[in-house]
Length: 287
DNA sequence: TTCATTTGACCGGT
DNA sequence: ACCGGTCAAATGAA
Image (tube, rainbow, N blue to C red; front, top):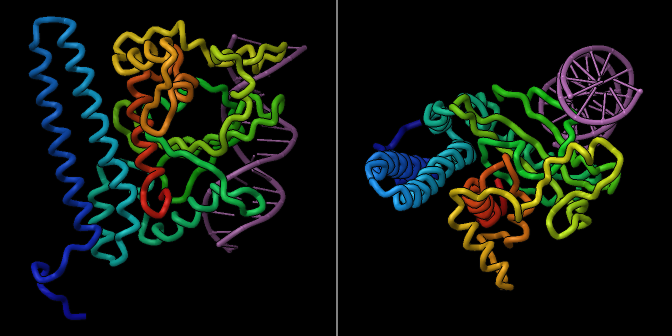
């Protein structure tokens, strides 16, 4: 088929995404430069506060690039565009960017399917990019692991450790996205925890004689060390003062459910909540 | 001994 | 037929 010169063609969604990815990468590089400059600040307090902020910026940019790369596949319909997409996604060794030519449509249908119940009903889900997939403060029990077509890394399947005791329907799928150091994982949370509603206000799990409970990773947020968590510390103070506190998409109470030691730092979770809210507010709903 | 994890088999949707 | 998700026996760790 005759091709028009590229300059005459309006940019495709894939082209636009590529440009956005490139800009985000530049931003991440600039953030890294800024971090190096900030490390020269002599005052410890100011330096740490600045490094915390620039770290937030950097994490958000890198995560955005990752999201766009995995999402870009949807817009790559022609073989040329597909080739460009996979080339752009080569920085991540695995995950959704590593699929073969037939992967696009199939991957989408599969993704949609695993968020449906056995009767085909829509299940509530959240997707989070994280470097510490196991540290969300809940007790999970692994029940399976599966090699996924065209994915470098296997997918692990977890259900809530209280699924039997409290019939908690929460599930979690964890898939390593790349080989970076530390690697990034895509965590898909399916169904809300009903067991968490049974927890006392300090988020301690219900105690019982079962070892599953005894081994729970859920700790008391109020006693957790929040060393560099400027934002969350502020939220905590405001909550102690009786104020209703909200972070993007999540109340403080929800955030505190995820916070524990030595689990994911509040800073990381705050960033990931933002990532999650981006997923949830995408036009058309999810990926 | 108990419980969590691993892993091959099986099931159901596409 | 293929593939993702789940089951359950086997295995390992505490």
